[in-house]
Image (cartoon, rainbow, N blue to C red; front, side, top):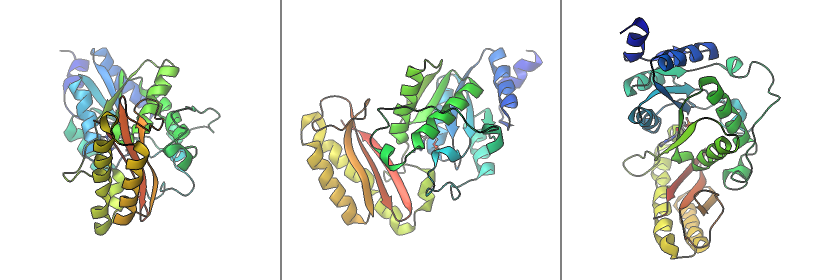
Amino acid sequence: MNDKDSQTRERGLAVVRTVAELRKAVAAFRAAGRTIGLVPTMGALHEGHVSLVAGALARGDVPAASIFVNPTQFGPNEDFAAYPRDEAGDFAKLEAAGCRIVFAPDKDEMYPTPMLTTVKVTGVTDGLCGPFRPGHFEGVATVVTKLLMMAMPDRGYFGEKDFQQLQVIKTMVRDLAMPVEIVGMPTVREPDGLAMSSRNRYLAAAERETALRLYREMTAVALAVRGGGASCTEATAAASVALLAAGFDKVEYLTVVDAESLRPLEKVAGPARVIVAARLGRTRLIDNIAVG
Ligand code: AMP
């Protein structure tokens, strides 16, 4: 085993802050014949993020995570400044999970010059979060494109928790023939069903109780509409009323959509998702589940 082999076979997390360092770290693993699995995150990591690292390991990839709270995907009245940050804790979780590289750039490294280029995906961004978060998916598509170009991974790992985001990224990679495979990973939930999210820490104790109604109501809708049973409009209307009665302040949308196009359905005939965004106090929660 030469020096390079021993370096890339050991455990241990390399923290890199610049694109040049990232490319060097990736190149060392490639030279040892390894494939790379990129796990883009905004930090404040939890078991959902860790499951993406595990997904990369399970496919034989060297897991490389990124941590960057991307300002361009936050609207002017959103929680960019308040978004939780815990770099030391994140590095410890990544190392324990078997991640080998973490790219944690600052804003100037990510955006050294004014951005005159963006990536905009249409169609799958028209509904759901699209109208509620103008510019959000353009910010996501652009930063994910940059991260993919910087790391040049074999695979990129993304959570189904952000189902619309996953479809946006799959569409972008397909349309632009990006040489990367996008792997969607199942949503990791708390034991009571609440989807893990960095934003759950905003919830007060009473709100935390209310929040788990999201999963219950989505499950009720999925059972009602599966196999072309109930009308999707009727089932989701009843569930929205139940969420508001339970204490949610606003249901932005609660819809049954085609799992690929994300277009709303009236009757379920193929792969479909129940998908929701709702506000509880100052927290905006999103979630989705497969129908059937
Ligand atoms: P974020 O840090 O929130 O931008 O998320 C980074 C990645 O982790 C995205 O691909 C998310 O979809 C994924 N993710 C977030 N929460 C979960 C979860 N509960 N289960 C699985 N993946 C998740």
